[in-house]
Image 1 (spheres, rainbow, N blue to C red):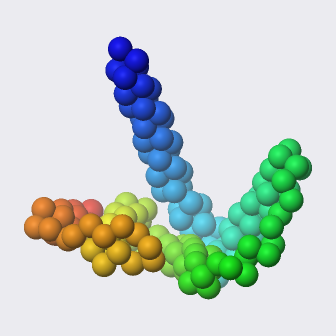
Image 2 (image 1 turned 180 degrees about the vertical axis):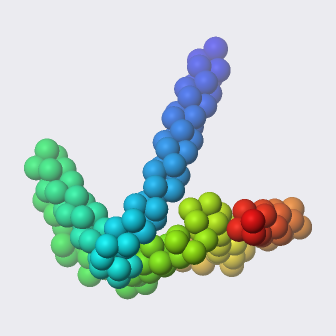
Amino acid sequence: MLQLNITRLKVKVMLVFFFLALGIGAIWALQPVINAGLARSTGPLMASTISFLIGALLLIISVVITQWLTKDPLDFAALSQVNPVYYMGGAIGAAVVLGMTTIIPKLGAGGVLSAAITGQLIMAAIIDHFGLLGAPRIALNSLRLIGIILLLIGVNLVIYK
């Protein structure tokens, strides 16, 4: 009986995370459209810069508040131990924001996001297949390959009117 309750609790926790991820995806669909709207007044590069500056400011405030609440000191020495490749996340994020801000007016939100999500899933399959960046190796099998092909077909159906 206890095992059944633990299993049910795990399922409920996973559902919470699923719906959080779903909500994040919905919010993510707003970001490039909002940035493209800002870009109509400022240009794509300035709009992307403003977006990143606001995000960075909010993250800095979050770190300060978290450190204040937990009383844990920041461990800046640990930063020197990080593989430099992992610092590329910010550069990739900047490229994504700028690219989406620039492309939204041409393909629309549905086109850009469907292509971006498909690109993410294709890259994820490559990362999994080769175990890149410390990810576990998961072979690219025929079912995953069919899924990628269907995604590419789906993107074309969304983009072409």
